[in-house]
Image (cartoon, rainbow, N blue to C red; front, side, top):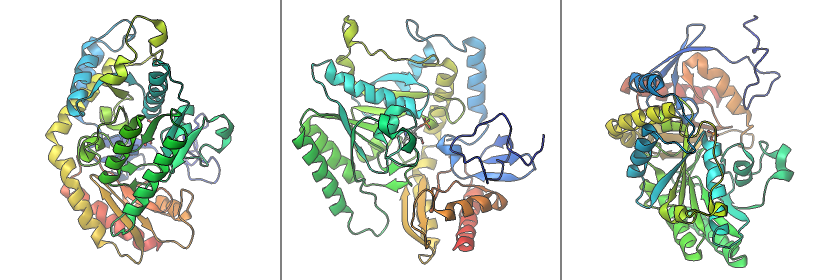
Length: 430
Ligand SMILES: Cc1ncc(COP(=O)(O)O)c(C=O)c1O
């Protein structure tokens, strides 16, 4: 096969099919690095779409998977249970705020969101209330299934399906950055807007859904803990539910185990995926409070949550997740300490070339100044993407937003070469 062409039988995600270089083939992953077919070694600065918490090829997780695959690779989870699912449910709820006590497994971030949306709707229905909408945020990304798309911002990604998306009220996300003096005002405007929506139509919104502390795909937009606290206060005052989509922010990404812990907020439902297995196999979980769960209990079939997937609670996934959680406990100082290094790095960047510096735990982001308007299709992103591999870095800018979210296996030396490489890249494109 011609090595310069994309594969004839593959359809790649989020990929324009014409006018693009074929994707490089990756042959091996070790620690924080990936090896390409042509022998180049690249540093994975974004944990491969934010999943590889402990780097690539971690032997502890590989061994746990091997052992579990030999013992029990899979069994249907309706009418059966198994130890890895039970142990993982306990381990997850031990790390989450007290009321979050019921774990419902699914397969990926999008399904964990679908489950949360459906649980929220049926929670009200089981109590005789018909609530048919949600409050969500401008710039949000919750996944690619229909419910997740509906909750997400309307964009190029959803244009083709717009007529079939259900009704959601979107409000501004009060994104902030270092040196931002007007954030409190923007937060208060958003809170007032939410209060108005909840007042105008009491009983309409099943829940407020938010990416807490960082909106990921929307451009690594950071909000303050204080905003989430205000949001929780308004949600509880008006008696709707609060869903934290921690698909990206979970598992140490914000410097604490979960964004809800960092913010000191207890949501009713939390969505987890991405880092849950350390990037080895797909698995997701939606965790509900006992109050939510109680609304579904009883013998009546109409109260039951009729939802499940073939691979729900796959034992191999659960075993991988348990091993990953152990590694997280050992690496807590790494993910909680990364913010300080990122702050030092952002201070090195030239404000003539970059703007809106922001950092949240293991995530550092900034916008490259360009003549063009910012946004996902800003051409500087493509320019950077083309240059990164030659600089030995795996980066995937979101338009003119450049960010890092490295695995916790990043060594001091790798960290510095990542920072130096990015500084050079910025100089080259500005
Ligand atoms: C906050 C958030 N929610 C949901 C999703 C969807 O997850 P998945 O791609 O695993 O379906 C993503 C993916 O980027 C995400 O960042």
